[in-house]
Image (cartoon, rainbow over all chains, first blue to last red; front, side, top):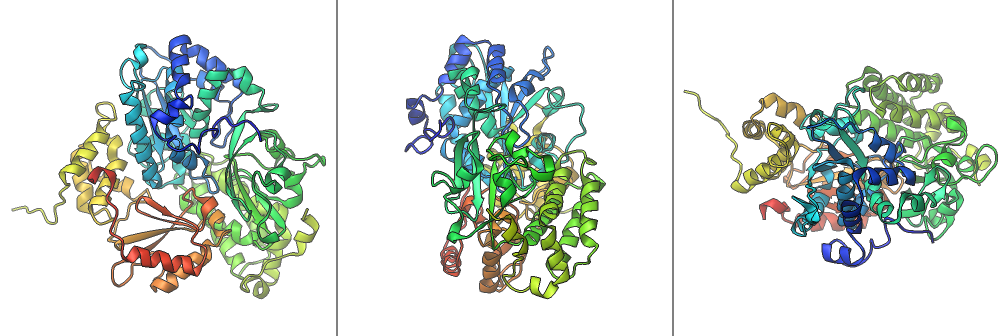
Length: 448
Length: 177
């Protein structure tokens, strides 16, 4: 059992109420920060902690904070990205549902550090039921003097609001999120200017993921140096992992960064092994956007070392033999799963979610979906595999926002590691489209 | 003489809810309340947003109607045509499929005798496929209004769900209570 920074009290009955939350040490970081620290000191602690953005990009949070422009007389905003939409990711939903005050505490302490007097939690529209939970908790915090004017008698003012989206994956991209928060279509903005200079309402803005913000109170209470001791190398602290797919124990797990992948899959503390006694075929370790890896490559790096649940270890080998930690959405495939079908499903998702602004993404995602659909349904051509690789390559890096890359990587990596399975679908359409048919040739070689 | 046809009237509670959202934003930024207003309109209008409701929103927010239309058509949660009493928003994305979402959706199609996007003849159910709802550990699953229904991984589970919903009234959102 590793240290629990985010989930220690998550199953305490009544933790969603201010009273119980405070009984378990809640809101200590607000008192400590506001009464004994300057905003810059809080920023320094977060920098020292090595905390990295937990939404997927993994950018150092303290550094992001230090980029915030601070012109005189212009308001600054902190916006929490609770638009959790990356397929496979459900950690923020579970976290907010069970322990709303933990996010609110993080918002207050972080807003103080950034000098924001109005902050927003932008939550995906499908989670209106969690918006209600957060609003109830926010009302309690106002009543207790933790929000509003002159917080805890310090002279610091903060208003905190929750804003719902309307159903659009793209709004998880920070500039699309800001557009949406302004009541517009979720079209990502060209950068520069970055939100740190010109964000919400054209004012300097920091956008952080739920888990990132919720990690700040522990850092303030225990110091950034203590946080940096947890984890491995530049992967400091703990991470919420959303485990799904063909495992015995799907759910959200808080791990110390550095747990071996093999332990995470097979230990009863985490996934509990592959369900129904099946064999492991593949893993998408960081949400649908990151490269899929076959069983042998997810366990070991190209150098033959044990792969760990860290930013560095999961990406070891680049895209040739590695993947990414991403949002920590760990999707497990057993031997009965068809990689072609899954790749088509993901391609359909990205086509559906492309905002349509950039031609390579708008047209390319549709192409990939249609070509994969025909392969999956027994109408593929031999040249389709190279066509997919070519389309993916032409989307990657050629769009305003990372949705293009996110659409290209799953397709390119599935072909890279499971090419035989695609070829089999094209060469043996009748066999491949039979109910429950799965290619098993490559599995024998790759299974651990 | 011009006559308003099918004019849409928000209830007082709905108007208060929209005003509450407007108050969250700086002066002159009332357009930010557009998505919340569309959610309110949908809850007020039997689960869909009519052109008249959009025009009413434009008036409240003091923006052009086109600004409402372009947003309502961008986001997938807003139904722009009439729907059944219960809209079953079934997750069809990869992680749920690993746990049987394809079969769940097939079962719904057979039991309700409709295709994806259609409404049953009695107006009770609309089957609406949606993308990942952040409930991958408890799939296959679906959403109706503000409630998740999870682990619908067998024919029996789907049967029970349909029976339960047949006798269920539409949820009242928090602000309407």
